[in-house]
Image (cartoon, rainbow, N blue to C red):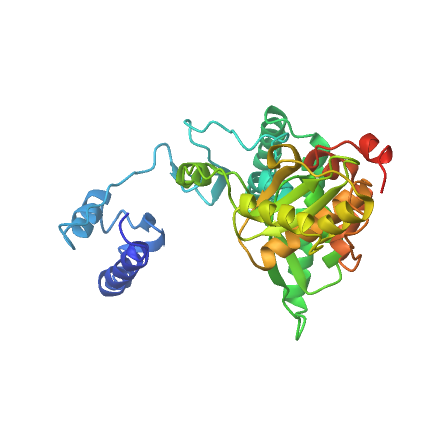
Length: 365
């Protein structure tokens, strides 16, 4: 709580307390073992030299503003973080611990989230299962729990089985590398894409043999909805399409100003026989009709002027051309390999562009 550095300052203070007080206590052999994770501490002490109530009293004396609570073992068993530790006469057994209040709910498999985001919970569960020194019986029971959890959240069993196999192989590979370390191994850099649909995952194939790893960030999150400014800007800037009233061919344009202003310029250039863009060239060359803004203009993407806008315009132009509705006067290059996604994924274009291809096929150039 508080400022962004609050957690760091709290950690610094706790380490200071451990350096001044706990090291001395450990040297007295009253406390045999002490480990802390954030604000959870596990202590093993010698019952012949001290008691749990004494330890709690001494710790709470350190700072009156910092008070600890204690949980002792019951029937030789205690829960710490996500494990249950059972003390036997000669050893200890470790099992996976789940709180009784846990709902075991994850992101549904059918949800429109990046696949990596959806399986991250199962990646954690499986990693925990294969790395913790739990008994084979506990491991089998945990695997059944993971499969039941996956089924309840709509995940195909083969997806979870494949993930387990992948993580097991990765663990074995890591163990081999520890025994025979690789020298001068270059670490890959990470880049981020915004996730809109599963189609965006096709981008990964282009970077398989590069020095880049791809990560996805979600869009339309709860935070974005809560922090979104409620504006009534009915005439924003961005990417727009301008339709010919005669042949239904479209021109894709961009404007850092309002779309109304930009449309007025198109009309003025047509009336003055001054083709400043492919739209005016198309109308004047074929003597086609142009119409009012409400019938011919549609805002495709709201964005600000710059490189981001240029990329969106190029993408829309390529998509319209693939559907055969882009005016012939507007030239499109094929230099960007990302545009190949449009050639192979029809649903991407269909979902974005409302004009059907049948109309374009019946139209003149």
